[in-house]
Image (cartoon, rainbow, N blue to C red):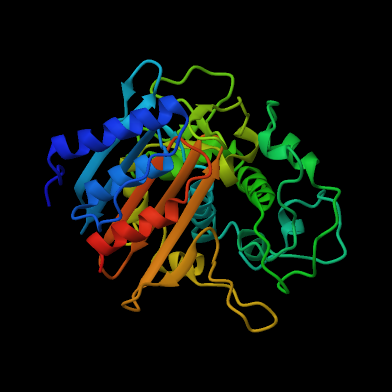
Length: 364
């Protein structure tokens, strides 16, 4: 399939509506006609949701078959999005990357997923129940998520310092009895990784994942650094239109939501989950196998990956992400050998809707 799936005039017409929507702070609706191409689907989605910039990349059998940038990385300066160089916050897709980082230590027999967290972090405050790394990585340990305005924290903290935010809080429930999504759990896992590896988490992940997979545009989102090609991050007004989001510091929660990347780099990562090179197939299976609660109910989440079936009953691994100025989605279809990566620079976008539309084009 060609990278250009729709004639430019058609996209430009919708982009014109999109620019109007951003400038006049009103919602612009589009005709409810089923899109004929993936590119048309993206364009209409951007108009409806008022997304300033987006990049989408798709691979099949390990080869990039479509990769394109839409809209602007910076509205004011009219800087266009490029799928191979514009850096977006990938938010919680960081958990999937961190899961593979953890997996490299499992393969090296330095970490065991079913061992207690306290085996690796003996000084972490004792709770009413013990819990394992697998439970932490699968959101079944009972560790809490954000409270209040913690999501908007603009204070530079190390991973170790960030743990102080929640370390003295009680577990929300007895481990494995419930599923409760927790980014803070991944703070703990990154502390485990850098403690066992004896080098900083970001350095270890770069050496074990980014370098071998040639993810040359993936790095930590340092809030106090000027990072070339990093997009501007936007929020949506309730009345319509967008504005630049507040500055936040995400380094301390790197493993759960602190990386920047491009759509093309994420496709490279996604292909590791189909054709593993840096982790073993056995450990890969551990990451994508859903955990089962004590009630017998599936969480549809392994360690760092959601696991569902498509309507054709083939497996699908995925993770979405939401952050300040970020709505993202990574979709991996091992039987069809397809990876879809979607990154945008606007918060609170129903990105799964676009993912379903693109799945219909490339997988069904």
